[in-house]
Image 1 (cartoon, helix red, strand yellow):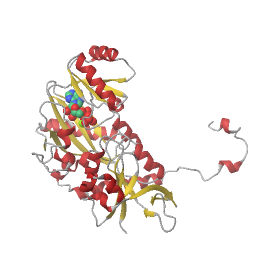
Image 2 (tube, protein in one colour):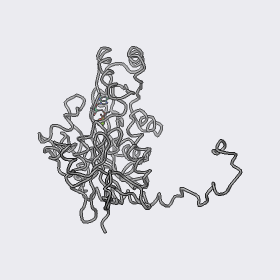
Image 3 (cartoon, protein in one colour):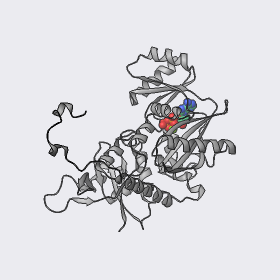
Image 4 (cartoon, rainbow, N blue to C red):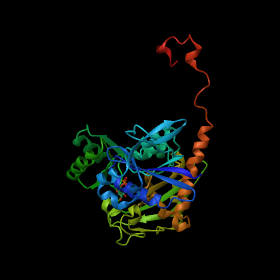
Length: 396
Ligand SMILES: Nc1ncnc2c1ncn2[C@@H]1O[C@H](COP(=O)(O)OP(=O)(O)O)[C@@H](O)[C@H]1O
Ligand SMILES: [Mg+2]
């Protein structure tokens, strides 16, 4: 009997479309001799659909028509398992569409990559691939992530954070005193460069804050690294051991890599170019052109950060090299990176199907480990009677 994998993708996130591309790529590479794939598309309003047409990229041009050819479903606990069930159910006949053994979230951005979806799956008791609730949540909030990693001795750029309720003048005053220009303004929890600006004076800062606050309630300000080289590294594993991939150097012309740079220039010189190839279409150098000693330092920091955050599965960690100061800073962790960063494993001979099999195996391993933990005592306290002092004292 093959292992039943529910691949979850889409969701209420600005990176919805990128997730569709990442998931379709992965579904085409999950080894069919070992796994059966159940595609589960999460719409932008949070409904779940399943059906074979979800695996055809061209169908996403007309989503109402696509969904019309699919089945709307819900996840329902059933006899100690989790069933994917047709909703609303038919009055007669079987409404169970599938009973997955493991879920594979291939989603990007807030609401889905940030622990929310992971918590939903955990509550259902459905094993899932990748980072758990805590590491996903910490990885999504750039400020919290910096705090956790700084405490573990990983170099990060110090940052200030502000809520939208603070006046622009106060933000500018504090940022000018603590950081100075040029500085970077970014929403605290977004991805794909959405809402990020580099500013050189107060006027630009105000415009940048206006923009960033349209995407998040909290923004982060940090020093702009002027002589910047960006280096990305994927890490695979879990708390028992993790390894770093080859390094990539995304190529931009002295500017913030935009959403368009990352996803919409496919086929124009991208390494594994071609339309709809997601992150794989970004212009990049693999391996990164940096001295061996710096590469070793980046890989070492990547594995340390992965373990410090309690990650599992596959992540991509992005670094900034400050070429003026000769310093390495960890910039961000993507707990479910675009294209699952498969292009960073292939150069080392790890084919995508092998990588996906490893991630699914790690999920099964974690589920087995968790099932050995005790979640309840076999006594029913309510049946024991008396002595609790009523509901008021229940917690003590
Ligand atoms: N402190 C900084 N100095 C210079 N450039 C930066 C800085 N922070 C971010 N950038 C640029 O903005 C891009 C997006 O920022 P990042 O923090 O990676 O957010 P996202 O999650 O949107 O990818 C980076 O890839 C880099 O090009
Ligand atoms: Mg980034």
